[in-house]
Image 1 (cartoon, rainbow, N blue to C red):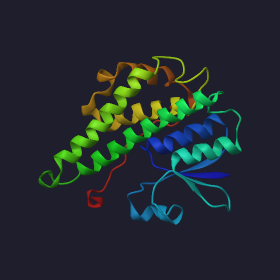
Image 2 (cartoon, rainbow, N blue to C red):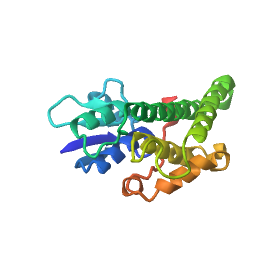
Image 3 (spheres, one colour):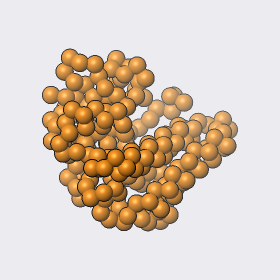
Image 4 (cartoon, rainbow, N blue to C red):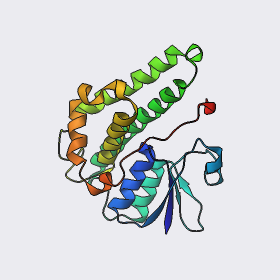
Length: 211
């Protein structure tokens, strides 16, 4: 059985968890706090990042988008990519935006754990701008219901719901549901899907010493 090393709030790990559930692939979930040195994440990933998919005695697989590519190659049914080439590229494009938004928030979150007199307001502003610009781009692209690309559930839908729910949990001041109502409606439309209901993110405590 596969093992997935994950963190409770991580939208990157959630994408993989949803994909595994959608493809009905059995796996053992190992929840860690990657900031905690006792988690020993680097044993499996030299970059010290999650998610990590452990496959029996084979080399572990990491980085969420690559794990999804690997799963699609090894377990093509049901597919989480659209049928056509252009639609597949569009789905991957949307995932790139979502990943960039979440990466920017992580950088902002860590910066704000510093003492106020040691923070860089320009750095904070840069990350905030990335988040808002990325969300504004998504707001203009996606429908309020249905699927992002084509007529089936894909990695784009997974990425967008994971991003919206992550920011809703971690970044209240953004007021994502007020500023980006189409994204909120889209997330709510898919919220009852079992793979999402079974992977709802929860916060973890982050030791201020990491910054």
